[in-house]
Image (cartoon, rainbow, N blue to C red; front, side, top):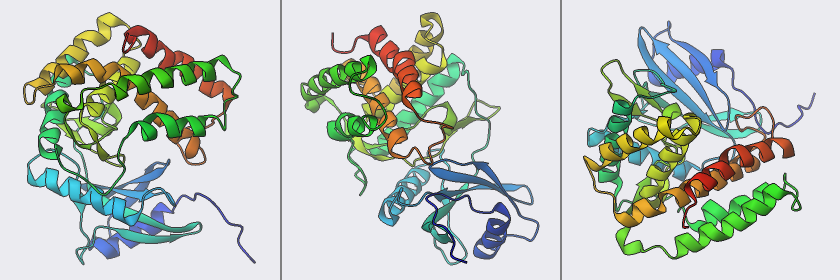
Amino acid sequence: MTLFPVTSSILSATHLDAFLQEKYDLSDDTTCSLVRAGINHTYLVADHGIKYVFRVYSLNWRTQTEITEEIRLLNELKQNNVPVSYPVADKNDNYIQTLNAPEGERFGILFSFAAGEKLHLIPAETHFRIGALMAQIHSVTQNMRLDRVQYTPQVLLQEPMGQLAKFLPEDTDEMGFMRTTQEHLLEIIAAASTSHIRSGVVHLDMWFDNLNVAADNQVIVFDFDFCGNGWLCLDLAYYMMQLHNVEKYEVKDYQPKVDSFLAGYESVSAISDEEKRLLPALGVSLYFFYLGIQCRRYDNWSNTFLNENYLKRFINGLVKRYYDIYSPGK
């Protein structure tokens, strides 16, 4: 019988368990369980109390070159004593595993486990530590370049609109807002004084879901899947945008934490006035970027649905509200 083709499958944790035991010389008592399915599938691997995370990339999500560059970045950060989850080589010193899934070849990497726990509502003092950690990362990645995406205005603002248009009609108020805002954001970025903006490699997805906090308030960051080249202040803008989202828009809740985060960052590296001026505009731009990713990868994004109503609520409840509060460039 001919099997019907699929676009995205979930690999059996039981069979991955046996595969990883053989590849990494793990014990027969090793266990493997699925933690999350999305663009990447995440499995928790445990061997006699030692934990790992195995990431399986979706088909046609990242090339082998892009993954190799992510590994290079993580090893560089580890060598510089930055607390990150790092790749683990197998018994033959290979980092990347190739798995023949029903849809085609998919790649996998075993990572060290990030100790601690996710905190949804993070106290101000921990935001300070996170800011300092981000600056520590940037001290390594400033002027560094990867053979990966360059986060240009086209990638952040122009390409996402083409993806959004597949799901949201042009004549809606929400699409009208997105078009007008896109033009305004492109003007702000084009007028930026680039001589006062640091560039290098950015994480671009650093927020509470991708870092763990240990009992002693130590922070470790993971999931560099969106790492690429761009202005370092993109990471600052993204973290502030997500903090604002989590804190339910109350100034009394989020502003002291934003201030603590920025103070933590500047305890390690200075942020120029031009970078600070651009943060609101870049935060809104990153909403555009990630909406584009959701639309482009809707078949395996971690949403249970993606339709016109969802996009309208997302734009009105998050993008427009953030834009209205900060009024970037005005």
